[in-house]
Length: 245
Image (cartoon, rainbow, N blue to C red; front, side):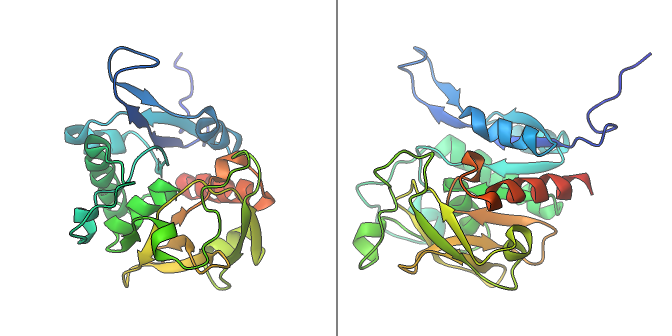
């Protein structure tokens, strides 16, 4: 007798993109990296996490195996040429294979109206896919900017964000303010007509975006997998619920 699959148990499969590192440290050869709490946050919300390798030619097949997509953060930046900037700031770190795969899999997910959650660098990539642009280095472009690369531990709050009323994010978290951690030197600069801003920090930096035409397409600049604020748990719960539909 066959055992029930996760989908028959109403536990959707959630694809999670990994970071990648060059040879050294863990292995003498290139290796994937992902913090445990990305997967554990999905599992806690009722999903089954599945880590996706950077096989761009298989993006469609990989996406067909899951019900929703998490685009994670990591030690990388989106190539400025992809959003129309001519120069590249000295602080920018490119991981071209990762970005190529994540663009392909994110575009495919949006075309299928599959739930997408972009986290930190994943939100920035999502914004670019949706036609937006990025601030390459916040300290150089935002006067009076907060400490967006917080000096205290990343499992603690770094600052607050204001949640925009009337947005899907506001409906999910049920509050107009959240305590968040902050681990980024870039941010969304300009949005396209296909998205709206759903959160900002008090220095004006965009902290969250969403695409209203999609069933569930939200990006947040912080890391809700650390569950610093009660709203973080609600974000993952709503995301996994959308994957069940």
